[in-house]
Amino acid sequence: MSVLAVTNLTKRYHRGGKPFAAVDEVSFDVGPAETLALAGPSGSGKSTIARLVLRLIEPDAGRIDFEGANFLALSGAALRARRARLQMVFQDPLAAFNPRATVARVLDDPLRIHGIAPRSERPHRIAALLERVGLDTGLAARAIHEISGGQRQRVAIARAIATRPSLIVLDEAVSALDVSVRGQILELLLDLQRQERIAYLFISHDLGVIRAVADRVVILDAGRIAESGDARAVIADPQSAVGKALVAAMPKLIRNRP
Image 1 (cartoon, one colour):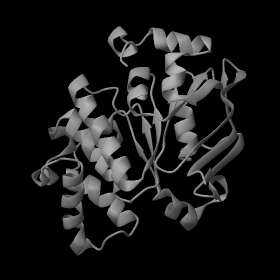
Image 2: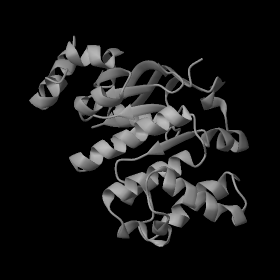
Image 3: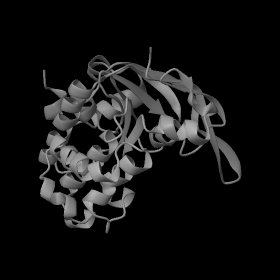
Image 4: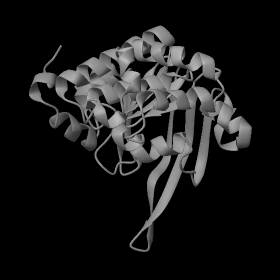
């Protein structure tokens, strides 16, 4: 059974007084411990799909099934409970978090909100989360704005895994990082996936990164699916115009890797 199944998902907006579909009848699924990448140029609908899947915005049409349940039909306590199993890591954790909050506060929030641990146990849980993502436990007392971008992204990942999710949506989660730090974060994500059996919906415009981490890829163009399939096969021989353009934009060194 798929962890996530999206069927004919549609979201319309108005531009200049005229309606347009930011997401137009998109369908895909993500299996347990699988990484499905959504790729495409700016404006192709990638981030809109992420917000729809998380129900940060509501679709105009279509269906979202998460862990076998109609996610769009849930509300109130049932929705809050299910959301613990569906988490997100944003491109810029400094914007996603209160920059003056401490690392401990950021990690305490999901433990408290979802009733995962009583107050007396939460410092121990926070320390364990920091260690799990390769950070010193002494960072707990530091403010988010006082730590590096790579450390902030590790904190964001720690926050996402705090609720033991079955799926994490990663929206351009490594695009703002230096190349060396990017590789370390990708290795961390792969290690967490192996150990915890987490599925990823990995959103990126970078096919080099997608080639390194994704099992399958869906390439979007103007809100519609242009092509999809095995990530390495699609990147090696794209069939759509947008797929060919994305491959052409990859660094030559990455394109020629075996």
